[in-house]
Image 1: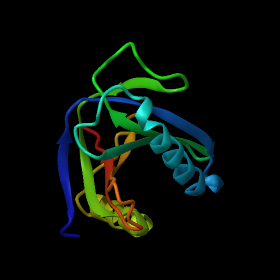
Image 2: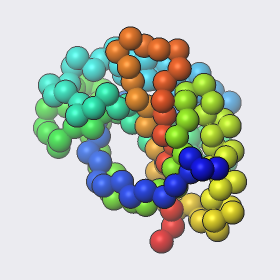
Image 3: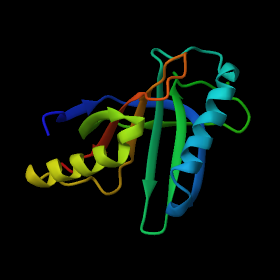
Image 4: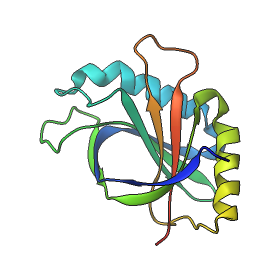
Length: 150
C-alpha cells in the first residue's frame, strides 16, 4: 500500500456533463459519459492546464451521480448542456492506478484508510482524475481521491 497517501487538493473550478443512475449501469455509463464529453471538449473556449479529465462522483445505497469535467476558470460562457461548479479545498486519501485496475485500486485505498483509521467525509464528492493521452492508449493513469473527514 506504498502508493496510498494523503493529499490536499486546492479548490477546483470545473465544467462538464453528468450522468445519474443506478450502480448497475456503472462503469459502462461512466465510460460513455467520458467519451461524450471528450468529443465535446472543442466547445470549451479554453484549454485545460493539463490533460486531466476530472470525474467527481457522489452516491448513496441505490444510485450515483458521475461527472466528466475539465478544470476551467469561472466563466459565463459555458456550452449548452454543460454545468459549471466549484469543489472546495479538501484533504483526500489517494491512490494512483490505471483505468484497467480501478476496482483493485479502490479496494486497496479503502483497506489503507481503514488501517490508518481515516474516515470518509460523507457530504463531499470523491474524485477520479484521468491522465488522458492524445493517442488514446488502452490503459491510462488515474488517481482515485476519497475526501477525508476533519
